[in-house]
Length: 416
Image (cartoon, rainbow, N blue to C red; front, top):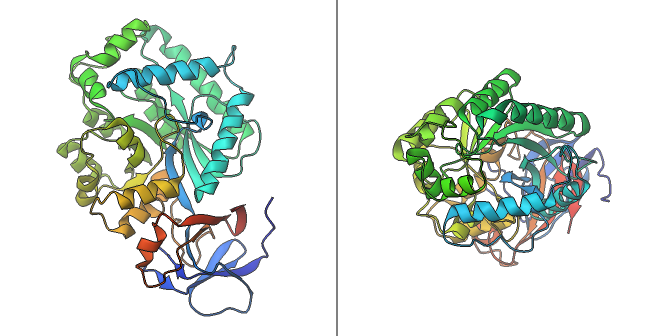
């Protein structure tokens, strides 16, 4: 357990990254009652915590992950090069873990989520958007977050039962956790259209954020367009295929148009969005975001990701880690470092925004994600190499840098 911080204290470091402005050399952040009082270089008359050769930046935000897989030691392998074969392996893994009964409680699942939260903190993360299959919160978690409760169902005969089960899980979770609740209609090809419609209307009525995996793979695009391909073969083998679930000739834009009506819509992955869909997202930037998961994208060897086109077009892009089922770890700092070192051509300041201002806006944490007076004192300290002549972003994203400490509302959550 971390030592409690005083009501008023200050932090100084070699660099302070406010995000809303350029990095400040030998900067000082003053915290009072959990809020940032000032950011600059003036030494205050309060207790000062000197982080030395470090960077202070806003606590990072992981906009998309699946904490249920946090115990995996390596990504789940595929039987062949199709996305469908990986989905099959993931579902088999998930089924092996389910507790018989109504699925409303699973202590082992909660343990995996708690393990994932610890890893998130070690990666500099102070807030997370997590996809949940069950209402498995059975105790306090060391990090704040939004739990997007997942809806799955293709069969028309099971639609009502699927919806009622979702409501039961949502109500249970709301009663036992301090986390905010959101809705996740899983994908266009695993949630029939009428269930998706219900989810959107429910979210609008209750001002809930919605996260949906969309335009993730070529298998998905083929199934939406033609009702055939590896995913249909898989669903028929599972006896869950229903040709009435969505219309032949469907495309991601059909779903984007509905998602645009909720207050905060997270389009997860978006690997195969076309130019019209990208333009639509740019025109709805106030309420819609694409969540990019760089190392998961590399794991699947997808075609060239439209990341740079998304950013250039004005789409708000946040960053996530997906899960250990497709990623070696769920450290959001390592995800940022990987993206920086991938030579995308994106300015490093924009890359950092993907896990700060863009991620907080995507999740509806409006007004946070920067080190600015009046904002919550959510801080991450990262130790950097000693060569002070290097560019501050180069030192931040270097292979030698590591997370030192994470603060949320002025209190220490984790320390190296």
